[in-house]
Amino acid sequence: MPANKNALIRYKTIDNCLRNRYRRWTLEDLVDACSEALYDMEGIRKGVSVRTVQGDIQMMRSDKLGYNAPIEVYDHKYYRYGIDDYSIMDMPMSQNDYDVMQEAVDMLRQLEGFEQFAEMSDVVSRLQDKLSISRNNRKPIIHFDSVPNLEGIRLLNPLYNYIAHRQTLRIMYQSFNARQPREFILCPYLLKEFRNRWFLFGSKADDLLLFNLALDRIKSVEPVDVPYRDNPDFDSEHFFDDVIGVSKNIHYKPRRIKFWASREQSMYIKTKPLHRSQQLVRENPEDGSCIFRIDVVINFEMYSVFMSYGPGIKIIYPREAVKYMRDKMKEALDLYDNGQTIEE
Image (cartoon, rainbow, N blue to C red; front, top):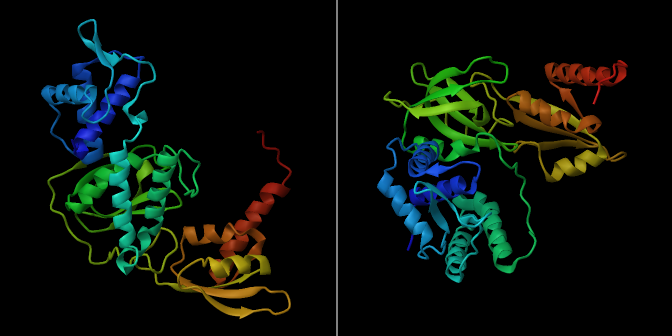
């Protein structure tokens, strides 16, 4: 018996509640928790009914989904699991579950040959590896970079739905250097990930000023009855063609950046370019060092990428970029040479 996405969210929420044995859960508490979870994850403002949660509990108790959850009532009022450490998330997958998932993975693999789905290959590989781990009880073969318990990750799904439905939002946002949150009435356009951090791109509803907001700094999100507007200066498909990272002033034009790289770093950079525009300008046959160029809008992320290579890279053009790097490198050197002791 298939369960829809909202029902699965409720099952998982009830499961999380009942696993917390330090609190006594009434039916009303479970209703409130499910309502809050659906609002946070799906943007659904209509609350969950008592009857719905009662039906969820009965479904979890049954074998229709394979849970057979040992949910019991005590003191004629409170709910809990009758078995310590029980969780529906620990249930083994059935053979039918494996077959259905394998069919889905096989179908996705058929799309990998199409240019429109070229970026799906790593996702499909991740799914195949997870499926094999569960079925064969083996260690992972593929490891993807990820950050567990990433702050703000719970907002991905509701924000995705808001963007898809062209819904204007009221967002309370507090940057790292702000004492209080700031309100944005924003028309959201795009979610973008950079170095395991997610960002929301959107324009203010009144003047279409473009902002990118880090999800881990968003305090609250709610839909508002304000007309949704598109920003003609933001093309989500090509906006990032001339930038490294997520920071971009639409009034800045790409600059040609030339940089020298040592032999060791050149071998790496040749196979993993800093940017799609990267070109090899010249290679020194004596020491193997190279000069490359890229055409990008200068921003903080660009500098941070160059700094990550340490002494293996040197920007040689334009002059303002050379000066910025020199000043930052000098600050780093002074940090080590000033003799100041920093306690652990």
